[in-house]
Length: 484
Image (cartoon, rainbow, N blue to C red; front, side, top):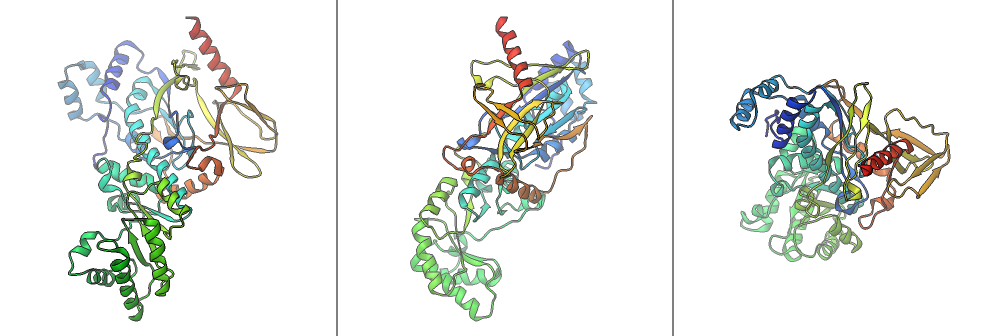
């Protein structure tokens, strides 16, 4: 896990194409590739960008070591001159990206790579692997946190994640999406995020009785005393024994700063409401009731509707794996090739599926906000160099159904370019914020979404429009392709 050079974490065809470019093309031919996705996970109304810091680390460490070259030689498909070229390989291009924690939408570039074709081709697989995974988990976490309506969400899915990296970087992404802490101690160390946890049923079972187990735990952790009450019988044994321990703590003068119970089975709505009455009657109205047990955003939402007396949630499997939507679906497509005159020649990919037709050219993204509310009105993908004035009227139209148009009056909206320059001539010029800083930024980003876009079922889809200039280039390329 601590190996930094992931150069060979790539699909074989990236390397075979590189050798093909090496033999048949100008290896310094500069191209543009866009990484983007076509639909929001979980049928949602938005996604959250995550993973850029790991992409930066990957690009910085991109090089072929001797054992890498030796392994490629052993495959018998790479020629000596190509392998010799790889010995001095490094990334020399430019990268632009949507910063981590930013709300984003389908079809707009998450990352734009401008580099010699061999370099741009090689980074595809790892870049998608990193961005797809972390953006998926950050998005899932944001949905879960939205369903909790302000309650704290703790990520604790490490034991169910698809391996150590997925568990650790998934925890990082979950924190970006809004979780208040993770059970993953390695993630806490690596990313300086809060680690949280209680105890397992085995703790209770290892003692002669439940009360003794609770008492021993409270003696060790009086300022973080959350007791798991469902090992034997929640209402007849667990909650009464917890109340007994809390009473003894109070009588002994132990400050009850953070204490309560955790439910991990049964009817969480019913049990939490009963437990709340018992705790309140015993004089512990500020005792936390937390819950776990295969939770996701839909179950949490349902429990909130039912009036469950739960204010803290531990979400594991369904969050760390995004169980109902386990892949993000990001893709990486060629958008332009630099011509002899230095100008980029737009390229387009056609498909029988309309949603798979790509947007050509060297692009940037403007985010458009309603001035009065600060909410996102739309995103506008345009060509680099296009400038808009907020005092002018702005005509937006759906690129799939261009007869659908909206005119924004000048002075009623604001614009913000959302892609940032990350690498310039192979050197990183961007400093990644800390994870908790990204988390706070993501929270502000989510506040720019309308409630209709954040709802879990059938959300409003934010419009992602093309500028007239970009749209015309796309149509021109489509017309040319249809004539062939």
